Structures are given as C-alpha cells and as structure tokens.
Length: 530
Ligand code: HEM
Image (cartoon, rainbow, N blue to C red; front, side, top):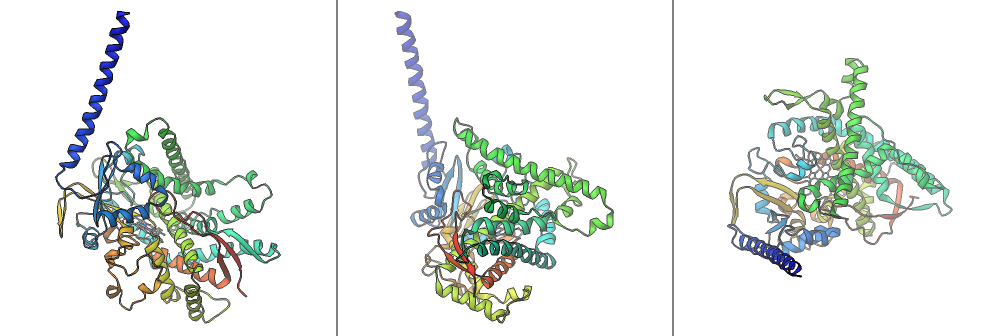
C-alpha cells in the first residue's frame, strides 16, 4: 500500500514538474515576444507553431488572408512560421529598395540555409534558392540563352503553335462527336499540357506526348484502366513538389515528424523524390545519347539540358570550376519546369474566366485580334504581331494583379537597413505580400474591380506605381521567364479566341492550397466560331 502511495506521489510530482516547465516555457516565449527589440504588429503567434495554424486554417485562400492582414496590421507586419519571423511588406517604398536591380543591394538572397532545404537535400545551386551570386549568375546566363534570347522566344512561339495544333485536333474530335457540336470540358488539364509540352521540348528536346495520352484516357470507356505514362505522372506530381518545398521551408522539423503529421510529410517527400529520380534518369539518358553521337550533332541541339551538361559551373572544395553533377542538372531543370508550367497555365485559365464573365472585355479582346490580323482566316503569328496586342496585354496584367501566381516573394537581408520609417534588423526574412500591394487602395482605384483599362495609359509610370505591381517580382531576381511567358500567353489567347467560342460555366475557380495560386477548376463550353 505504502509503495503505491509513494509511487503515485512521485508520478504526481513529475506531472507537476512537466506542467511547470510547460508553463515556464510559454511564459518565456511570450516574454521574449513582447520584449523583442524591433517589433511590428501582427497576429499573436503561439509557441512552436508561430502563426502556422492560422496559415493552414486559411490554406484555401492564402492571398485573401494576407490581404486582410495587411489591411488590419498595416503595410509592414510580422508573421511567424514556426520560430522564424517574416516581415510581410506591402509598402511600395520598401518594395522599391528590396527589389532593387543593383547587384549588391543587400536583398539578393531569397532564403538563407534552412534546415528544411537541407532535409530535402536541396542545395543552394539552382536558380531559385541560390545564395551565391556567381553561381546564380552563371546558371542565369544559360537560362537566358536557352529561354529568353530572341531566337528562343521565336522557337517558344513555334512550340506553342504546334501544341495548339494538337489541342485543336483533340478538341475538334470531341466537338464533332456531339450532336450539339459543342463540348463541356475542364480547361485546366488541357492548357497545362500545352505549356508543359512546350517547356519540356524547349529545355530537354523531349516530347512528352501529354495531350494525346490525356485524350486517349478521357475518351476510353474505362479511363481508369489506362495507366499514365511516366511523363504524365511527372507533370502531375510537379505541383506537389512545389508544395513540398514550401512546406519544408515553413514547417519546423519537430512538427513535420509528429505522429500523423509525418504521413503528410512522407507523402510530400516521396513525391519530391519521385520527380527527382525521373529528372536524374532523363539527364543520364541524355549523357548516354550524347556519347553516342558526334560533336557536330551535339552543337545542333542547344537546349538547356545540353548547355548545362557542357558548362563548368560548380566548384570543388579547392574553388576550382567543375562540371555540374547529374543531380545538380536535374534539380535545375526541374525548378524551371515548375516555374514554366503552372504559372502560365493558371494565368491563361483565369484569363478565360474573367474575359468570359465580361462581354465588354471579351468584345475588345476579339476586336483587337480581328484588327491585328485583319480578320485573316489563316495567319502566321509573328513576334511583332504579338507586340501590337496592347489590350490583351492589359487583360493579362489585370489577371496577374488580381490572381498573382504566388502570394509572397521572399528576400533575406544580412545587414541592417532603414527604409523610410521602417527599421530592418540584420538577418531579417522579408516577404513581399503581393495581395497586400495589388489590392492596396493607396495604390489602386477600386482595387477589387477587374478593370484592364487601368493598364492602358500611354506612360505606365504616370498611371500606376510600378513598385505596387510585382506580377513578375522585381529587381535582380525578377522572373527571367517573363518575356517567354508573355509571348506564349498572347499566342495562346490569339489562337484560342480565333478558333473557338467559350462559355464559362465554373462560378468560382478560386485558388487552392498553399501560397502558389492554383486555379482549381475551369469548366467551359467550347464550340467553333461561326
Ligand atoms: C505568367 C507567367 C509567370 C509569372 C507570373 C511568373 C512570376 C514569377 C515571380 C513572381 C517570380 C519571383 C521573382 C522575384 O523573386 O522577384 C518568378 C521567378 C522565376 N521564374 Fe517566373 N513567372 C512566370 C513564368 C515563368 C516561366 C515560363 C519561366 C521559365 C521558362 C519562369 C522562370 C522563373 C525562374 C527561373 C525564377 C527564379 C528567378 C531567380 O530566383 O533568380 N517563370 N517568376
């Protein structure tokens, strides 16, 4: 009896001790929080999680949540992901400094080495998370040559043209089958496949046959019996890969490894590894191919994969330049594929949605296409033609103002800074709050209204504050694929609206899960134009 009494007593003491430690650590957390040196307002964080629980609560519409927070807490406020503090910025004066085009602007780095990136064995050697200026700029030069040089832009147009021809073939087959000569489809899988085929061909000279495999599956009586091919599987997993990187950057490993949470963590991690292994085998295949052809032929295919294979970008331990490893090359290509597929396809889907819901805007889009191409039934679109499409460009900009491809853009500062009234302490993680800027009544008249005409002024600087419009980011890390993306988008708009009439059925194609905008669904009825 006495033994049990003493045993219970000890258990009780241990419990009290645990509760005391728990209470003390909470008190310490809030003491540190309320006495922090430079403080901005923001939603109250909780220990370990910070504001992550609020983030996940609002995960279906992070952009609106961030917009509300900036209205509530001001143009510079704090948000905690785990114990990491982010300063969320939606003051255009701060953005101007943070997104300066100068090489040594103090804000070159996106994020510093984070345990999350290390846990993913994702080094800092690609474009997106590179912290070393020289290695980043070498890879960027290759990117510009393969994607953004005038020849590459023209080649990109040709690829979109070919992709559209395939799309047209399959849509026409579907339309012809119907008595009513129209078809209702979710447009997202189609548009995503056109862009994915184009960027894959541009970067790796490999045709992934995504449109034909998709058509075969949806027209088969037992679609579930038709297995996805490897390329399809890869592109379906790509946006999970992008979510995985965000998740590893934001969620501390302690939480990632908690029971039940670890199921989700493994799901993301395994997806990431699957896409990586796919990329690595693609690189290995190319190395074998190159070994079997002569030097002259190799020069004929200056795609990004070959350019990366022949460049000396990495450095060994003694600082000597050396070729990149298969893994480094694969990760580089995968990064660009992620950027190059989802951003344009979401933008095009939202374009169809907004234009389809406003007959006046639709009329102006059709008029511009008609006038530019003189109502020619068959035409070859040139790069110069695309530059004339001012109204369509304004609609694309307005889509990207209201539906930016990402809710935030990160920058890290090593040195302290003072930007107007804002003090930026050293080692601060900044995050440009895009919705806070794009929907800010200080910078935009009727910000909630979809109004492309706001971008039609003769001189952009006079009509809007360019630091309040960061649809392609800004400064030295600004999207290097922007011209390529704009060219492809305009081309798709011209081709689609010249041939088809669209009736938008989906009422709310709102964004989905995570900081990246994902158009969830876009049901449209498509028929031929008379
Ligand atoms: C509608 C289409 C697109 C939009 C709205 C878009 C937007 C963005 C934004 C906001 C950033 C961050 C910029 C910053 O940190 O300041 C970015 C970065 C990037 N984008 Fe795009 N993008 C698009 C299409 C593309 C395409 C088609 C490619 C490739 C072919 C691409 C490649 C990249 C790369 C490599 C980066 C990282 C740049 C760096 O860290 O230095 N993007 N993009």
